[in-house]
Length: 141
Image: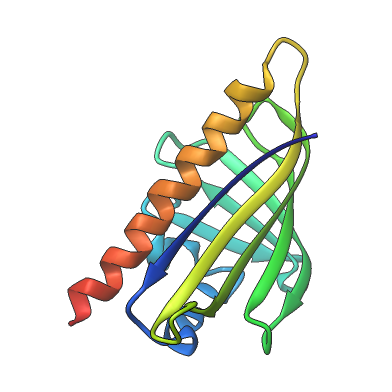
């Protein structure tokens, strides 16, 4: 099992950050890598398109609005992995001001792909995505 994770502090309240990212269909609202998302199965499965037009299908596994967190698995994707489970969570920042956002995943690389190669893919997505998220709040100030 391999993992990737990233976190960032954002100068906005946890409720404001969660309002933007907490919807399972909200990735296009804050993540440029995902310009399109459509829900199916009563909102539990999202069909995403990346800029290359590749399809990513993810299933909502757990959702806790009061704890500002959800977890999802990948059912279909152009990534060389299996057994993917990721969690996105918004907490109050350690200093009590603003938000601390964490995005982490565990997965198994396909044969022929090293742990480092697979981890690097998601590490980049998470880090770039969280920087983009933070920039959306700076632009509102």
